[in-house]
Amino acid sequence: MLNLNMSDTANPASLASADDFDARLKRTDEDRWLATRYADQAGRERLVAIYLLNQELQRTLQTKEAMLGKIRLQWWRETLEQVAGAGPVRRHDLAEELARVTAGRGDLMAPMAGLVDAFDDILDDHLQAGGHQPDGEHEARHLAAEAKLMRLAGVALMAGAPEAGLAAMERVGEAALALKAELPGARERWDVARGGARAAPSPLWPAMLHLAARADAKGREPSPFGKRWRIFNAALWRRL
Image 1 (cartoon, one colour):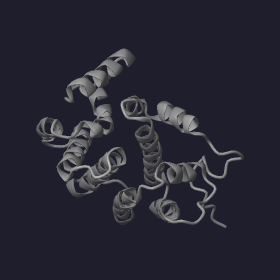
Image 2 (cartoon, rainbow, N blue to C red):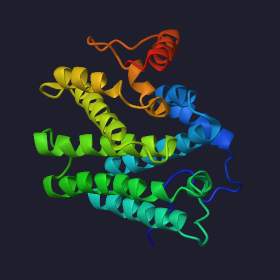
Image 3 (cartoon, rainbow, N blue to C red):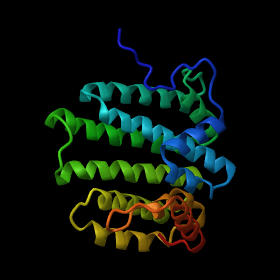
Image 4 (cartoon, rainbow, N blue to C red):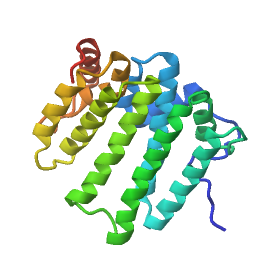
């Protein structure tokens, strides 16, 4: 029988606490963890859970067979439907944490489902082509998934966030990923997108600050202190 417990965190003897999830994000994605320090407690806990969900979805792209990835995605799709409903949620620590931090925030359900759908689109390509293809159309699907994550994070921080601000977040997320993947025209795209991000309302910035800690044009990573300094300056001046 196929085991549908879809992560190392499934069905633990005791469920993790908010501090446990916080430590998990710090260990696996310190840039985003540092950025979440600039959100209030509720926003920070929502962001942490959302970023860990994104990591689970990212793992679906690393399965040996794309169909197994799609099965994992379906498990998460069904779990998020439970999170959105009034009934019980599967005993899975991240699922229950998502239910806790999104309680009363029905506006987050559609963006979370949209994030799952974006990964499903990527896996459709993997099924048809036998894996990742470095072409424009397939790369665009990866950029779209990053845009969905940025939008979800923005809505998590600011209910009723203006569409212009969320769109600016999507563009800067896509541009940063394009830059990392060294796609054609990525540098110009990044310069335009980061300029546009300055118009985003301040409550949205904790979902963008991690981009200030990116490697420089020569691929050099900042030191731990340099990373924190860059994020602090980005938060202070609202400039990536």
